Length: 119
Image (cartoon, rainbow, N blue to C red; front, side):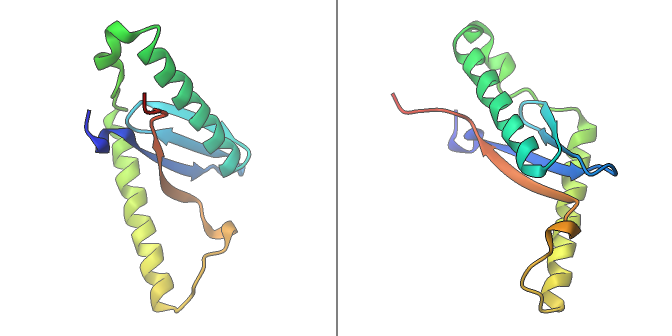
């Protein structure tokens, strides 16, 4: 397992009702929450539980479980969000704005790491 394999690609989107959907592409896990922080915390817990089970109870199937890629649709969403974030940052730079208001953010990318500890 390479160091890059320990970093998981994730994205988040705010729904029309104000709730958040977060997705981990590399393990095909998702969570929902009323806030970004809540949804991300739930996803982090799911990743930790999933990985713990993969290295203990299901160790025989570890290579089938990690990574477990999400369907192509979610990768397309991820890269569209990446482009939108780059465009938003570029517009902000041109307008000389240092920050984006939290209400303006409806999509973002983030990374999680696999919960491993040195032996």
